[in-house]
Picture 1 (cartoon, each protein chain N blue to C red):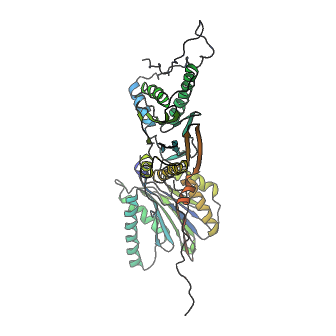
Picture 2: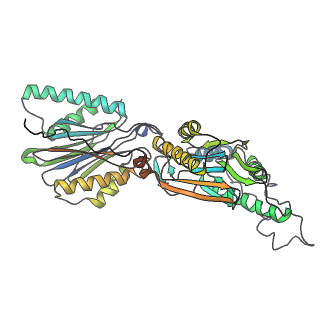
Length: 272
Length: 204
């Protein structure tokens, strides 16, 4: 069974006579993935899907507003109940004007985002102009669709600024691709949606929007066991993305809800 | 997820010089969702005997109620408090009664026995006693707790230092566990007084 690897092939025409162009080595010759040699391929597939199922333990969110796109995420990686890291970068910088958020299997997200970055760069070189957010998300969605059912776990949001203005797409491992202006992905997303939806206005300043994003991530880390660590907030504007803040969620709690000084139980009073 | 990891918990007890400390986390969750951050896992049986229960929260509460009942009966008949070693045997017997449909908890018992000698022990869910001279742990964060206690424990600590040690061990262990944490609850017991403290921890 040969997997459909047309997603790997570039749109660049072959240069020169031979096919051995140094520029294309390592890219067009990206191999198709080896399939495991087992007697029970279906059972093996099922087990590998089960392996990543508990994943998507995270909270990421993104929304479009007047000044661009705000992207935020937590930084916890969990393996079942064990916290394997509190400092994972879940917002991946695809290129200076596009960000991708990571939810699901870290390996899957890191690989496919980097692959998307390569394809975007090749598009720029071939067409002498930047790829649109719509185009980039379509490339990713098509690549993931061809691996549908094989156990990839990717729930990502592609956020960027192109000629048409701010763009935000949600792409997942089922091959789904949705355009929208508010998304949250991961096990903590219901909690983040609650805060995000009630505080959202299109006409927000950058400070208000970043505070809304930070608060939503904080509330999700409080309620969801699989989210925590550091709340990172990025902003994508016409000049590209900038990282606005990375606040430790443990400290944010006491910033939002300071511990009231204890009142004394028995107060000594002057005898009348 | 396993049934012992349904609610999430962390309990630890440590021995000091004529004193002991027992600490737990404060989270009550339903798998990954946090429901409460003030759940009581450690309960007083009498002034020199505490029990901390980890595991399924409903069994924690029910087992605690049964044990308090049995201890009150004992007090009426014997006109004195139970010794920690006796209480541990009682808990073990009650757990083994349900050998084929057990209470899904792991108790940690800590008390001051004769001559104010500190006594700690833990049990599995069917009553296998494990006595220790230094520290005992239980709950979803137990592996991290073993590591932290092993590194931080020193014998014959006074009450103040014991409080610091057990708090640090608890907080650093639950910071590696998705299912426990959200604060800490520590009791340090000496022959003359019981000090109860709430710890400020990471709320994620």
